[in-house]
Amino acid sequence: MGGMLAKIFSFLGWFKDYNLEKFKLDAVAGLTVALVLIPQSMPMRNWQDCQLIMAFMPLFCRP
Image 1 (cartoon, rainbow, N blue to C red):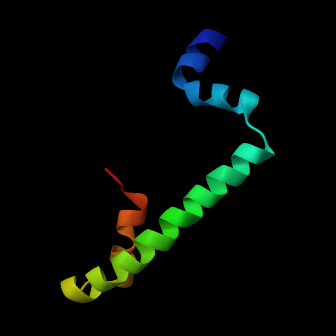
Image 2 (cartoon, helix red, strand yellow):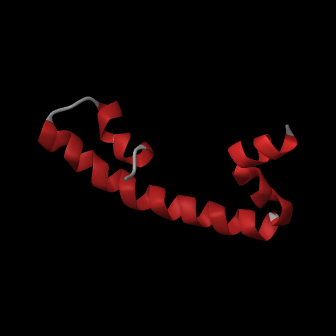
């Protein structure tokens, strides 16, 4: 059973060597992406005449 769970949830193995320094780097990376994508999505909202929530969809649905 443990082997099957390890295959399904393989990302849990990443937390073995995850520390505060890596968390800080991940937080900076996430903030950088948010600071770039949010200003890009606001004009798109105006051009496409859509609801505000639709302007933020590219933040959550990346290819």
